[in-house]
Amino acid sequence: MPLPMVHLAVAVHMHRLEGTTPSPDFLLGSIAPDAIHVRPNAGPDDKRRVHLSETHDPHHERVRPLLAGYRSDGSTALGFAEGYVAHLLTDYLWVETVIDSFRKRIPPGLSDREERSLYYLETDQIDFDLYRRMPWRPEVWFKLAAAQPRDFSPLLTAEEIRQWRDRTLVWFEELKQEPMIEPVYITRESVIP
Image (tube, helix red, strand yellow):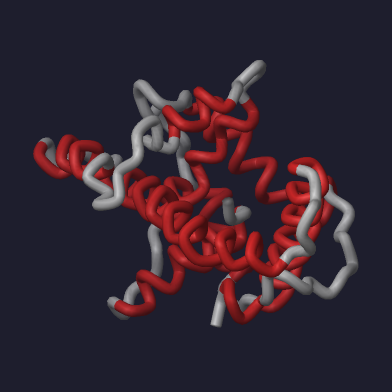
């Protein structure tokens, strides 16, 4: 799946198309589904549940009920829910485009572990490149830091969302070593034109 900078780039691009900028809540929602990674002992079933992908849904119907509940009651969490859905739909499109292309281009015979390692090496580099290149990144970081996490029941807790947000805000500068490679199988242009 795409990493945080891709999700944030999609959030910014979606709003640019409408002549607006994303709210702190939308930005936080756009990275929130991956907060499952901070949950102790979370496994693949937890990730599928949080990403609403327990069953195949080619028409994205799984996101409609999620949004409908927030729209019908005028919830202040609507922006967060919309960002959350943007994340889920981005993941779906990522699989259909970037991952499928990646799998067709890599050398045959790689083990699952080798394929996963190569995939994350390249996507990590692309995320670092986006972090450095995107002119909107300082504003987005400011808004993310200001966003107030709250429970997104029954999927994630406010604490999980806060931990993931805080990890994202320090990841590129403090926590992760940049791969320092030139991606071969996943091009920057295929991710963000």
